[in-house]
Length: 417
Image 1 (cartoon, rainbow, N blue to C red):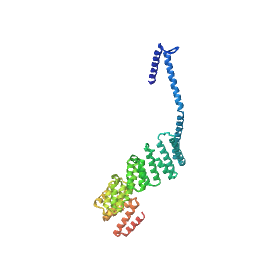
Image 2 (cartoon, rainbow, N blue to C red):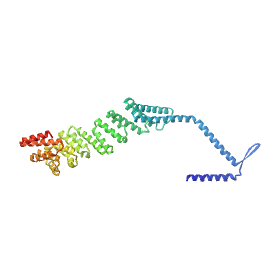
Image 3 (tube, one colour):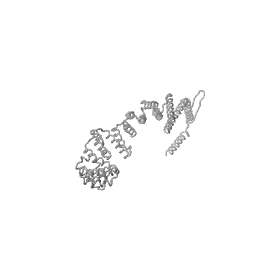
Image 4 (cartoon, helix red, strand yellow):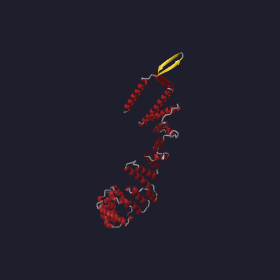
């Protein structure tokens, strides 16, 4: 459509010129005594147009002639700029290929090219970012070569605030690389110091949070590491299973760091409700509470949510839960005893529940019922520890009855499960 409009316009101009010049009888007379020159108006207009074109071409030619030195300088600087970009690409490629010496040389050569351009007064686009990138590549290569002095030198130049005024992303990247190098050297304090210099938005990125988590774990700051792991799990930086495992491990470390009942209670209260529902974590907390001399009733209160989900637990967790409850059976109340008996009656073939109910009856001096339950449990228990404990309990019951033969047989089975 546009071409058709241009063609119509061209025809219109041609028609206008033909109408104007076809019947134009005008003349232009020039008097140059003693001569008189008569020229056609069409010829005069044509000569004026030709003169304008000639003058314009001459001026353009002179301008191009005088611009040749400047264009030659620009061409040379452009070649240097292209060489600088090529050197940066080579430095990156060599660094990825593990050729650290070549990568460092290429990055330093790129810096030389950039300095020559700056001394020539040529402004390179994104000069600050390119210079910082070259310094970071050189520092990365120096880190791989264990040249700490060169690494620190290039890092400080890469973090020059005057050069990175318009390139905040490059500064953030350099800070993150510095934190990574500190972690590689097992220096969590330096890594945390570099990460604290990040802006608030950059500090909440997944990469920064991962490094913060590692630094906190190396430094032994369990509570900070736990908060960071929660945030990473919330951002889906881990798979659900991995995130839960990491949080659980850090929560266990937090509980282990408590040295008395008060500290353990504060650590337990610092956990989120979903974390207190984790079976492994609740079992460990209750066992830790009993180790520190806490009340068994409080330990059983922590285990109550886990007990209510007994049927959904794995066999290993069931065994751990029974061990945790067994530690406080001497002071078990009637309510908990009713819970255990109810669970055992609901699943009478579960040897773990038979064992727990038998031990509870034994602590309550219900010898006959304890003997029956423990005998049934000993025949079906797969866990070696519970199997041994069941036979030891039956040996004690036999000794209470004065049955030395049965007691000896039970002790023998306890010693050889």
